[in-house]
Length: 453
Image 1 (cartoon, rainbow, N blue to C red):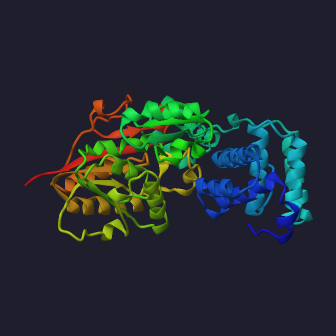
Image 2 (cartoon, rainbow, N blue to C red):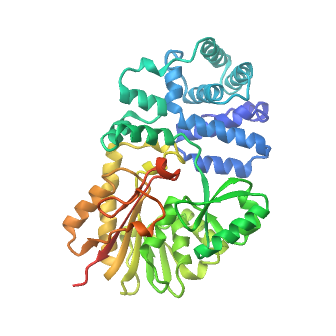
Image 3 (cartoon, helix red, strand yellow):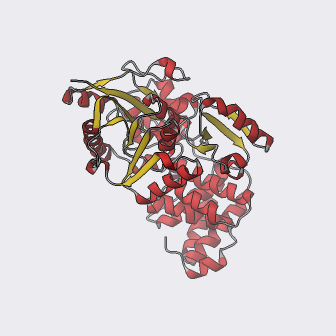
């Protein structure tokens, strides 16, 4: 969206203008919602109440994009500019899913934005579309006769993804899965240290007025349901860090004793890497990532958590990495680049950006990374492969191909007693956690041993 000079002055106090600028970055500039929103929260001088409303509307407008476009399809005739469509989406979202703002205020402010950042004609168009929308009853999804297409529009998940998961899930689980993607993601944290510290840290946070509950997924985790956790003394002292509960399961499955020479092949931004380091005593972690910026975030986390002395960070493509010494690694973690389909609730724009073709390209990279990591692993060593995606091509099917092509690699099954949660261990000994099961990100973890000749 081209922002006119007059918009910066005339609309600077307009909260809906904030919403549009953020939504345009996500809808039309392919930026990640979490980064866009985090930057806004860090830089805006708005009140906490106003910021919360902006985040709710922007996030919801991304989550519900296909549903909102369904409501707009008969009202928008011809081509309109992308930013105008985003303005219409957030206006309708606020009307359909929230009840704080009267309809006339939604229309008036949207028209003002359209005129100032566009021109009089765009203002009249937006006015006509929104007034027509509010005059009519909300169109029922029952007009969509094809069941999977109706699920796609109802839950705002692209049809190809609905059809994909329909092949793998029974009907009731498919609906539960799709419905879970539009729920508000939980804010969870992982303690920095042994699990015995969790209750003490939680008590400390409660004394400071925060509402927290123990994770039912990881003994290292807890959820924050109310309060500013980032300004808490415990956070500043490095007693915990923010991390999704499903990804907290990765580090312990390496079965570290504390003295290992460990490699984290795709380490940034550092949630899992800092967890690995916290499990080491006199061992050491080499953390790789292709992104210098993301590795700097890892370094900041490690410093706050008091773990910097256990981690060497190297900016490199993991495929090109060769250790300076000839010593192979005892344990390697490969949290592979993936389609991120398991993150659709936390990063809803992902579902609109991915395609089957893109997934196949990722599978090629994942296989290359897996094979290279095997070459760096000592005989008898352990490799933990994980992804934040739920596609079978990037997980079970990839592993099946890896095992056929690499006779020195064998599965080390993850056991039910190694996790707290039910129904997450597959028949092959892998861990697959779905968002609807425990309110976490979707995640996949597998574990392997390199055979000793």
